Length: 92
Image (spheres, rainbow, N blue to C red):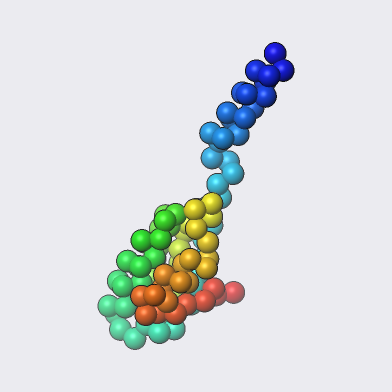
């Protein structure tokens, strides 16, 4: 009976999405120089595995990214914008 309880507990732990956490971060992207820049930045961020939603604003030069922190991290997001030609940093 004890083995069955351990097996069931393990199955629930593996199947449970409770360990996944959705995070939202605001990135400062000062290199945006025109209204078309957000399109490129959004496309680059959307390609990062784990990104759920991206909103990029030219007037504020910011990108608000919602992501699954079990699949990606802030470093991957800033790397993606940098690789697209728009270095970014976390806005505090």
